[in-house]
Image (cartoon, rainbow, N blue to C red; front, side, top):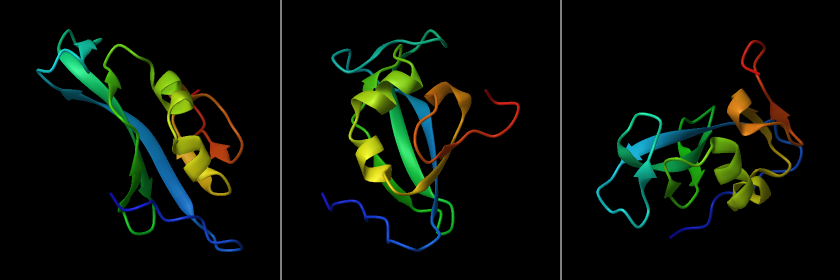
Length: 103
């Protein structure tokens, strides 16, 4: 697996992060989620300019909240020094922007 690109100092870069529930059959990584399906929660960072995936976290059980999966993953360290847009489910942190009305 190739390492994620690091932020370039002085460059304007905007990343978007969100979690998604992916239906899976493997009950070692899945749990019954809010949609009553066995799923895994995966947090993904996308570059707003290129629309390419920058990084993703390891799957967590689908009943884990986005904020918990984010904090327990390596993604906050990867996103350090970059402006990140996230929804209110992630909580707030350095460099994070939460759109008005989504908190």
